[in-house]
Length: 247
Image (cartoon, rainbow, N blue to C red):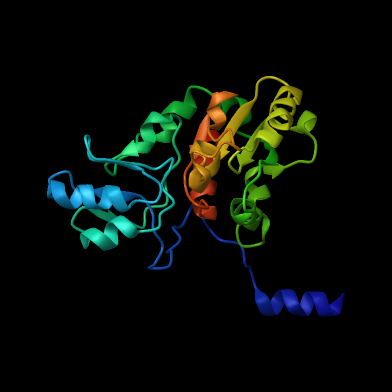
């Protein structure tokens, strides 16, 4: 016991002060992309042709964050003339259509105030569903339970049973083998309930987009309330989306 107390005194308080104080992310972090619609058309087309996710809409000069894996290839090819990735990690949206962007996203809080804040503002219990992903999204979600982030201090917890949950947090491209399990879990949660699609895979299929072995778009089988883009979403992106939408 004395050793534990000694270690506590030596290490001090480790929990982040976010959201009261901002967190400075590493300079190489790629957040919300900024698109220049006035860029040369040939350069835009070159970036679109090279994009591994086919997420560049050349007609409307937008990027689909629901497919984007933030590889940065478009920024590299254009030398930053067409796309530059900011360090803005606040990318959660309440609508799939809002993920088609030139660099602006609607205020997430305005939507949530009308829907879920009064219901889940003091406590939010989520059942995590890994629907066939690579485990990157799951790993970065688990990070939120470490002392630095301490997700439970906000009244948000991941639970083992869907019957104890207020909603589901889905990661992975939703393989056909996980389709029935995902629907069954969703149906087991009492009303009212929420559905969160986290990561490019759950939103659109991500790197597996177009595969015959996946459903891909979670919204095609159950209604999604909150989208958190990324590959994987940074823990701060997830935390901001949860706090803004529910708290």
